[in-house]
Image 1: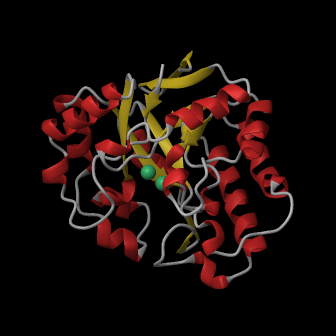
Image 2: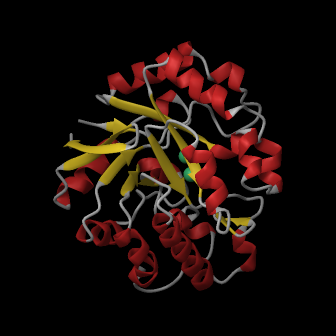
Image 3: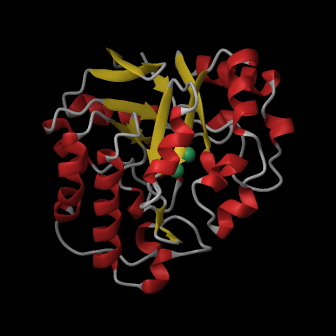
Length: 274
Ligand SMILES: [Zn+2]
Ligand SMILES: [Zn+2]
């Protein structure tokens, strides 16, 4: 079986109105594109910062600009007008764990996808609020993986999204030298202690880095720690569903992975891969 759970019903660009994209017809387009690619288990995970309720968690200026939709209306739409699983992509914001946990626990998700995009006020993957202006890749990578470990340990998430997102820019930003496992190690205690699935995401293949998230060496460490894999594309349009899945499946098979995770009402089960 194939899955795609980390999926957005609309592009990140503006305008990208809920009224235009949160429709039964748009959900049907996603379902059809998924079927064409052999993806049976399909869900959506909109960015939490698109919803006004996220401002109870954090008032970053970028969130304030984006938070216009109602979270409960989104949940209601997915449950009543689509046959898609209901998820959300919720940032890990250090120091705001309780507030985010409150937002998440009040709703009936199939799964929660946890992401680290921000290190304090700066983002690893945005031109605006660019963490890289502070330079030192050694420090940025260290902070990123420490934060990822905290995100896992928080227990808020079913899936840890794009686990080495910090590499997104590839050579367009400074890269640390040598064996990167010294960074992955910083996240591993938190990951090992958590009941969380590790996302294998083909989104990185569409980004400057041109690689699957996470790197094989990082995935290897997660598999050794006994963590299950959740396969997704981070699609923002139907055409990106299952993007380059052949490469992801090949990588997983080569590492001995034969099962992937499925989620319903925050219960996890495993299904055969492929
Ligand atoms: Zn993300
Ligand atoms: Zn996403």
